[in-house]
Image (tube, rainbow, N blue to C red; front, side, top):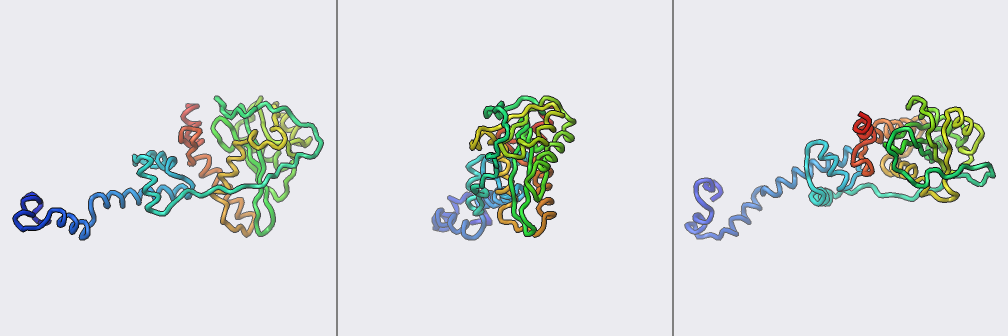
Length: 282
């Protein structure tokens, strides 16, 4: 019946041979791959490749957009079912400790940002924060500054000490990268590093306006907190760093190669920061 399916109908052959059509189809499905199974296998391969390409950090919504950029158009439910068949799921979040040292008694700035994280032009508002990572050579501290316009990490620095020099180096890198813009609102928490004379003088020289979160309110700096969440969940958790150099290499690759240029952001219409800036500024 299978060999003659192109010449005669299954219905006619089943009647002539005195077999049931349902029995024939059941045998066919057992003896070979059905069209549906073949389609699912192809989908599973494409979804698994996209999942691995993006470090296992994308769930179904982001994978839909990532696949579409590569010319593969699947809906969310199809991708979700494929992830389930593959036994894949986006990396889970973990809670992080607060690193802010705000009990220093130094002057703090007014909260100019007021949780307004939507900025229409580049180099209008930067947010900064610090986190830390353990290595076999000791703790390393990472300071970053992010342009709220495109969520680009415009400046970052690593050090084995959480000092004013750390945040100054990160901010200087941001200024150099962006061509020394003036009038930028620079929002941070109330940590002693940001209230230091060195950092405040640096902001003054660049004619920037300082802004600080309310005491103990991490939501006032949610974008920077979100970046560190992504960094740790997508790249750091589960990795054993034997040296500071190994960590620095990973941070460079995550920020400069993946996060700024490839990672899709839902707040940017599922574009990467680089693609968003290219689209909006062109």
